[in-house]
Amino acid sequence: MPAPTIGVLALQGDVREHLAALASLGAETLAVRRPDELTRCDAVVLPGGESTTMVKLARTFGLLDPLRERVRAGMPAFGTCAGMILLADHVLDGAAGQETVGGLDVTVRRNAFGRQVDSFEGDLDLVGLDEPVHAVFIRAPWVEEVGDDVEVLARVDGGAAAGRIVAVRQGPLMATSFHPEVGDDARIHRLFADLVVEHTSGKS
Ligand code: GLN
Image: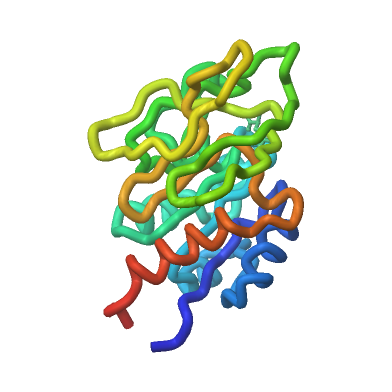
């Protein structure tokens, strides 16, 4: 079976960084701007950026409904920061009428960390990794509620937001509040690439 192709939604945000992290693992990658490009992907990364802009662009480019259909049909997807918001079924503090792709049974709070800690960095333990990750948060959401099928992968370790959920997995879906594409640690992308292989082997 050929290696799965992992697309990165390339409408806005940290597209190049995700493509580089995936390429460093030897993954087949594709920047996705059109529906036919999504069709060629076995999995997709929804990058950080600005969720309201990204969802509007996804609608304009005819990608929002195909993304919804593919995710509902079981395509692996990994959302980071704004991408986590896009994957969430429910958003608090969203823009009026803010739509999402959905699929991940969580409620996220947008810009949750508040003004004083708009952007910060810290080390986190993450389920599946032996050593902590250095997590960069930029006007990040957190996960306020999770459904029964959602596994919590990481929580904030200290400070005012201690205990807040910042990484989750539900079947073939993964999301982080922070930006694993920043820096040169591709271990979280490796976890996703492994999830992609697990959920696409036997197909095609
Ligand atoms: N605050 C942004 C939003 O609501 C997310 C920020 C990010 O992706 N770095 O979409």
